[in-house]
Length: 215
Picture 1: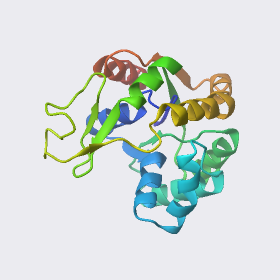
Picture 2 (picture 1 turned 90 degrees about the vertical axis):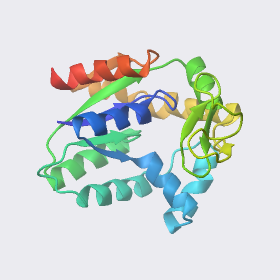
Picture 3 (picture 1 turned 45 degrees about the vertical axis):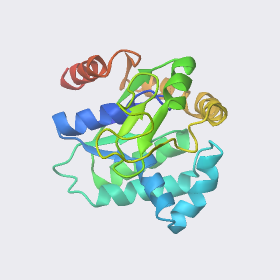
């Protein structure tokens, strides 16, 4: 069974995806990570996506769909179970995913929604920083480095993503509520949606997801 992790920005999808990839052998596909890599490398896709990301807007579906299909085609679909993080985000992408799954014979998927309030999202994301050298992540609200501004792992300088300021976070949440959250009704009607409280500690959230996938 393939899995889609659903939820607002800052709900913990990335953290849980890492747990599931390591502990349950999912093949993790994060469209957000792929887009950020393209932006850093200044590829043609990255240049197109950058203007949308910096404004807190969704990247056009045509760009997202091409990334997803290419990533899935790289893996032997007969032996892989995929984990989607940040995709799909609207009905057009849901249709894209259905077509991709059909074309590549990937079977079905389950959707898990991590439920987190807007207030908690803003608190989490506005405090998020990462090492500019090794990428190790911290949060100034609850996972602080031992030395202010420096990475515990390599000593590199810590920095905040350009889209992790309160104004942009609120815009991202607005986009989520208007264009993405309504998909939950669609998934619920199809019987493959489970809602999980995402404001618990990371391990408790993982155990809840694991129970759903093994149930």
